[in-house]
Amino acid sequence: MRRKIVAGNWKMNGDLAEMEDLLGEIKNQLGSVDEEITLIVSPPFPNLYPAFQSLRETDVLIAAQNMSQHEKGAFTGEVSADMLKGVGAKAVILGHSERRSLYHETNKDLAEKVKTALNHKMNIIFCVGEELESRKQNKQVKVVKHQLEEGLFHINSKDWGHIIIAYEPVWAIGTGETASPAQAQEMHAEIRKMIAEKFTPEIAEKVSILYGGSVKPANAKEIFAKKDVDGGLIGGASLKADDFLAIANSF
Ligand SMILES: O=C[C@H](O)COP(=O)(O)O
Image (tube, rainbow, N blue to C red; front, side):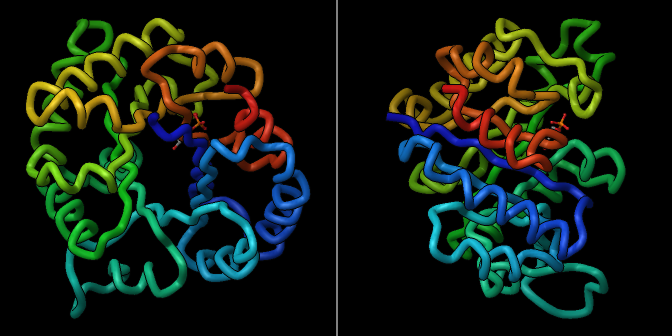
């Protein structure tokens, strides 16, 4: 059975005190979440270790929001896989559309980051998704296929256990506009088909594919009910404990 996952991407939000408050509220309500659901939170770099300390006694996993493809050395401002593991991050988000568009990360950069993360046995939430213009031209499947082929599909079959895919249509991120459940299902099924064709149907069947883009407690149930949607990568709504956990309880 595929893992059901709800991951909160906190982006560049929350100082240490605000994060401690948020984590405190999340911990208070963890008992309400089904054990089958994997919860992940993704704080900014400086808050990774405090989050790790705070979540020690829980099953909540910690993901970083980015990682260098390099091991060490003269790369000012960068953070390595070893450093992330050292502060408790078990996973890393790679290829978020904000990294792609604002920081010009290319599929080639991402392919290298994926390789480094896997060398360090880190789990990866690999993000893909089309911009509005591509959707209008009905090119969304082609765009996502290209992102996967160049950024992710160089991995070995044995590495798929470390991979989670997040489909995040760029036009739905932080906009309040969500892909319809049918649109999400359609793309998730396409992604699974791409994995089945390039690797095997068994591998494709086991990969968790998350939807991201304005997921809220009010729309999560409908989206998560779709057969190929295994959870969500949540931005804004993950900054409120009640909303984040309500989304986790929407399967
Ligand atoms: O990583 C999360 C996505 O960018 C979704 O963000 P959002 O839920 O604020 O639209």
